[in-house]
Image: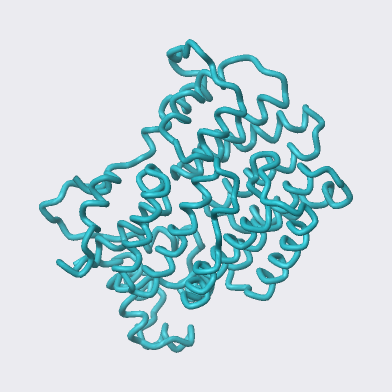
Length: 379
């Protein structure tokens, strides 16, 4: 039976019984029991309060929520991050990289990423990074490198790539590109657990774009606003998240179409997808389901397969958070159908799989074990 041993130890170290912790947080004792035995996970909105009650940081709490699984006859989870070994060597001046005869353009690499072909993106990026480029192309290359590292789950590499993207973007003197790079810095900081720094970065990045009427700048501003909405939701601040979503919707209406300026995917449909992400982060499964039924991903540019699959990953997370494991599996399977690598190479989707496997009941979640094997979470 999987358990969150460190979470229980932290509670005891804080001198709290399960009942006392429940009273402090305004939940039932049974909820605390289920947190510690992995039947459910603490909702994002309550995690800051839980961390405060236990006297730990948000990063330490995140570590405590990792499962301890008693030994089984299954081999351990395979880490997806070795996919980034070539990129890592290219960025830090390691061994010479294998050259690619027909080097793709920066736009082509962004298209590969947005089509959720993460393996090919990882294969071609190192050669592009080690090829001298003007500042705007260098910035765009590091933007997609930061995206890939964030998606795979290597927060340290994502932070370095995003920082390099920002430095090159500033040299390019292109405001929209600077905004896109700052967005990636915010995403990388969030992935690394530095939520306050991510929020500060995104908020500061908005200011220079406020009066810029360029469509690329408007899209960068919209992406940053959506990031702030998600950050607010993860803090449990539904009002702030709602305000940011309204701001983003106004910007999307001003843009008028589901576009992809600056590789942001920003537009009305992407705002709707982020509404779903916000509902999931707030733990509102009913709202997440309602929004999921209304989103028409066919409106998105054809290249955005990754965005389409994200709808199902968010719905899978919402279902898993509320114990609807069979529904979660169905959404993960649909995400995989939309984009083959969207589950196997996505740290968030793999995390949902680990949660589902940790409480698997034989026969209750058909398809789970086969999906986990394809994603190389188990063998």
